[in-house]
Image (cartoon, rainbow, N blue to C red; front, side, top):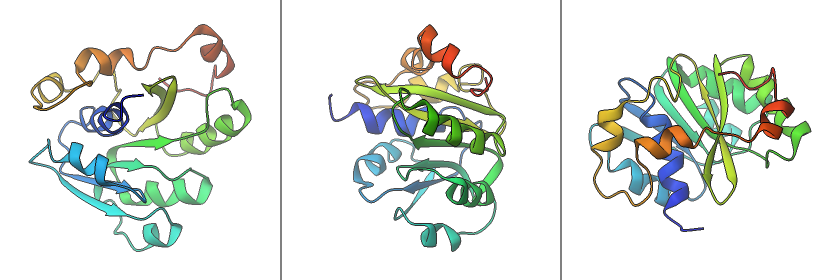
Length: 181
């Protein structure tokens, strides 16, 4: 997989779904590729914390519009993310392969306690992330101007954004009632 696809998809999908993002939290132990993508949004500030529950505990409530997490989610992590994300916020989070249905169903059910929309999306080479949103739908509410006016992108654009949410029927059927769109 081209090394630029993953960071572009992890950053721009949630950022271009939020109406007016001002602050983004990146939870990562290797945030540099994600920060390079965040720099393309000059009007949005980004904060990085390490992949640890302790790092999340110290963050202020309702302080981030978007959270990009490379830390696997569980109920405690998702509860802390919910505490720090704003009322119309988005979360992009890594997860097990969609073929690992048991683990993903548990994570999606936990996310369902806090988010209105929960959808897997392609981030390249057959891998997916989960987009969880409190308010905005990632294909209906995409900010086209923000998505198509970014300079320096090699992969992401508004068409890729929408297409990344297309899933094969066997995935749709397996996660019926759990994926919220």
